[in-house]
Length: 90
Length: 227
Image 1 (tube, each protein chain N blue to C red):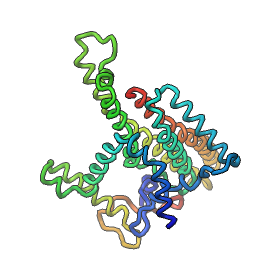
Image 2 (cartoon, rainbow over the protein chains, first blue to last red):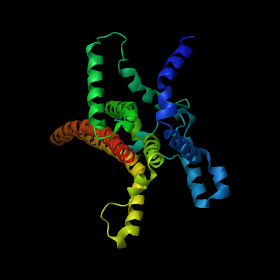
Image 3 (cartoon, helix red, strand yellow):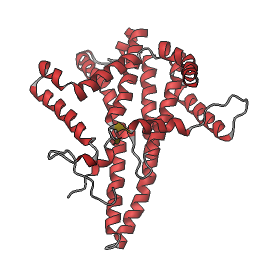
Image 4 (tube, each protein chain N blue to C red):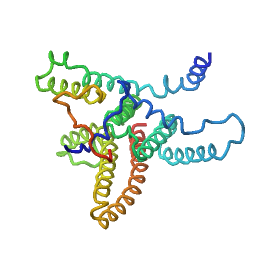
């Protein structure tokens, strides 16, 4: 299968980099993944361990992101974060 | 009815699907792949020459142990330059205006250099926290200051790229809005604004390339310290 052999070819070339040369990179990638998860989805679990203010901030960010990416034909809720684009230039 | 200037920086989605993934794939699609034959065409030769010169210049102060980072640094440089310059086209989205993307580059790469330093020569890595010739009473203070400057590096790396590009795009939008709205009523002012816009665009092309280079250069300096 072309897709499978393409991945195989790529991995045979890149394997020494990912497994030997850039081992230390995976630590940072793991930390950033956890941080992104916490900021985007971690409001409920943060409530147990962190202060109320941090939980509210995380909830605000996750809820805000949800409404920012809502398609326009869904309609805007009252507390929409950014106003609709009304300029001819934008 | 106010115009929100930051709408251009919203990560684009279509029916819930993030389009930033397509934006991030754009650099991969634009460059020719290496050819299996001996003599490549002009574009591939130019690309190879550019990457070769860049790598030679950026890896010259680094010893042989750090040369395994050549692929990463070259890829990062080409990727960032392409994203930054493509974002200057009208109505395109610049992924490098997103702090999340830039921190995702900065933190793992910086942390990798620090861990490499502590793994290979921990004494040497710890020695960076105290400059040579420091007077004894200042030692504790300076260790704290150097530790803070070490920890601030990834934040500075990410925020520098984000802020430069965001500010540039914002300025372009402001000046172009002013030129457009003044076009009919005050033509002279509008033509001055258009002239300013031209100069600003040239500046932003330079900033786009320089900021990508600065990002990679600083990473190579951090690597040089720890290898």
